[in-house]
Image (cartoon, rainbow, N blue to C red):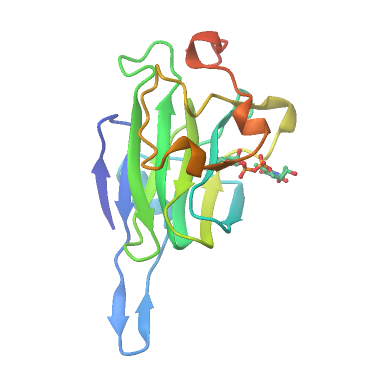
Length: 184
Ligand SMILES: Cc1cn([C@H]2C[C@H](O)[C@@H](COP(=O)(O)OP(=O)(O)O[C@H]3O[C@H](C)C(=O)[C@H](O)[C@H]3O)O2)c(=O)[nH]c1=O
């Protein structure tokens, strides 16, 4: 497992080893002790899966507020996404900055996103299946969002806005400037 830093030090990319043979490959996609050896000590409590049929489906930017804040380990089981994490920690020098990484079934690359970050992705292929581990259960009353197209964030989603499939809910989130201080 290759674990690499990103422009925001606590956000990591992971590349699990694949054991190829004539049948295909085998890969350990998550091993607690491997993450712990890299200083990522997280108790994942729930696995999520979302299928997005259309290219250009954008889900996000979402986060759960304390005490249900979630660390996430995201990977793509089929297709490809641009995965984005936005730093919401008011005290961080990287507050408001983001990491954007292409995750695909082909590479197997994963993204670790600690609590204190908003998460979202846009699909770059049809029928993209995203699977991810979270460290706190779903808590609808603590589930909040941030405007994906907030100019202050400056996220390049790689597709024009009119090509995006976005839920009504995700079109109504506030910009960063109007977001309460959920994370110090
Ligand atoms: C997140 C979640 C949702 N749901 C139900 C609630 C709705 O009836 C339905 C769809 O939920 P939502 O529209 O919030 O799904 P996404 O837009 O994919 O939200 C996710 O998108 C971004 C990328 C994330 O990182 C979060 O995990 C999550 O917010 O699933 C559940 O039952 N459990 C859950 O953990």
